[in-house]
Length: 324
Length: 305
Image (cartoon, rainbow over all chains, first blue to last red):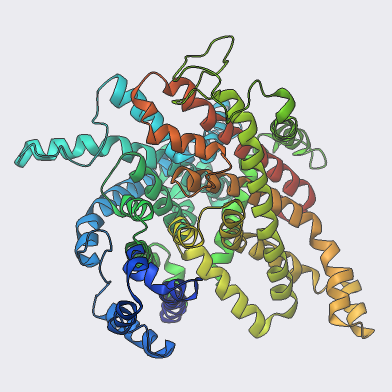
């Protein structure tokens, strides 16, 4: 168990090191002055003297390893630099955006896992039936659909035409709502992006749950349980589903990168003020420090979620707990 | 990581089963899986042939030059413009046909980059085991954990939007999965008699890899290539949709980017401007995916249980 967590820890440390080093290297390795990426394109108008001064004030005249150590120090202190476009500390901007992404991704992970598992169990129980094959077809289709396109169609249908839901944002701006009204407003804004993200995430869970369930249903203890005359529900959920759940938990890691990537695009479509939308705005404005910081924070969030999942895993699978 | 290994095969097998084989479970083993796999592969190949055909024949079958204004802005579908026009009066059907060239070419070339890296890494890691294997597989894990789209956006923002940059950005991030699959294959080949015999006879390592290992994994590489192409097309669409596509070469994703920027989904124009490009992307992704699954099933019997 400890070794399991230590091995995982080393892996995540590597991911973090890679992300940090890439962020450090990109502006310095690209052709042209790193100033363009770190201080904005206006540096083209500076005189040579001003340029040298700026380089010195940002520490860019130091040897690379000194810069790298300083860079790590800044990150450790939670200093992500300043936005070129907004002139504000990036930590503040990300602090405003992160909760929205956590809300969207968290709810959709939960919904997609529950629905995918339930669907997978139902399809596997009726393997080979029309329901089963139809489910496979539908899930393949939704796995191939571009997420942003699904979002655009939802907006066109349910927001622009039917007017059931708002078209963009996370809350109605300047409405001055509070309490219950604010909650309803926020929930109404969340429905379409959440539905889009959940729909494209379900197929992965469905396919894995279905396969895993089929494998378990072939085991002898299932035949025994059936032969004993246990109720169908008891065999299906108590014996088969419980054991079939393990791979779904394992796949969480792969899934997470997928969901976060999906959220990036979907937030853009719905102008949902999360990290993905921030990334898009930063690309439009060529605000490189913001692009880098957002990428860094998204990577850290994914690692944290993975660590949590790893810590929960032994609770689900007793074999990991026992294998010291 | 052992957990990742099993997880990879699980999702892999889930996909294989998803190709509809399970319905055939009760047929005799020899026949099992042949027919549905043929059907699935057939559908996939048909989709690919149609789309590739449209891309190759674009200048001859396209009704208009997609870059020119050939009608009024926001024209609804009519006999003159089968799929209507966009905000500046360009024919959308022509845009789709020429867009196939860009989308498919990027998908194809990015997958080629990915498979070249993936095959090399997979063969080396599988054959040499030990430290080399550990290091390479650690790299694979890093690439698999990192959220790929934000990383691609970061790279694309720095490299700038161009046809080749997109191919590189996608290629250098999609190789990890094929590398892992191919490594597993090489691991199982390493102990085969003829490979051991070649080693015992003192054949140079490079020669063994080139003449004995490579041919053994080529067919699996091909299946992985097709799956990577399916993946790359979807990723290219997302990048172009975010405005990171080549502004001089309009892909299917870029058509949707313009539709989004001009708020096409707020007017009736979404029916002919937003629906068709997304459907075509879906069909292309499905076409590659179905072909890949079918091919993998046929050439890799180990995955059949």
